[in-house]
Image (cartoon, rainbow, N blue to C red; front, side, top):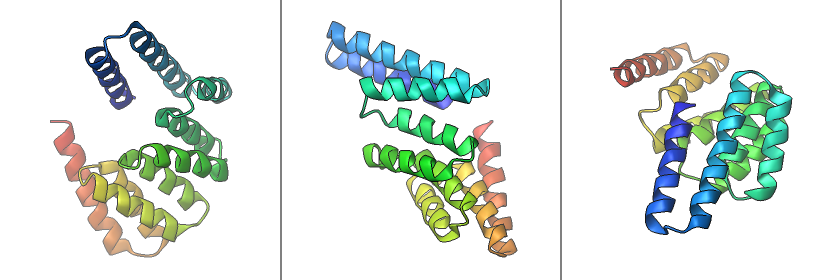
Length: 168
C-alpha cells in the first residue's frame, strides 16, 4: 500500500510541476483519493465496496493501470482468477514495465494451475525488477508445485536476502 501512495504522490507532483493547470491538479488529487480509498477498503477486506469503487473510477479514469491492478487483486482474493487475469492483462497493457502487475497475474495463473504461464510472468517480473522479493517468493511456490524443491529453495533464499536488505 505504501508503494502505491508514494507513486500516487509522485504523479501528483509531476502533474503539478509540469503543467501547473488547476484541472490537472484537481484530477490527480481526486484520482489519488479514489485509489487510496480502494486500498483502505481492501485492507479492511470490504471487497464488494472496493470493487464498486474500482468500477466507478474506471469510468472516469479508463486508462489508469492502478485501478485495473486493484480490481484484479480484489478478484484474485475473491477466487475469481479468470476475471483477475483479464483486468491484470489490461493493467499490463497500460503499464508493461511494472513488475508487481506480472507478480499478481502470475499468482492468479498459479491458482488456475497454469504453472507455465505463472512461471513466465514471474520470470518477467524478476527481469523487470531483480530486487522484487515477492516475485522470487511466488516463483518458489510455483517451483514447489512443479516438484523443483532445489530451485524453490534458491528462490526463497534470494527473496529472504532481498527482503532483509529492503528493511535496513
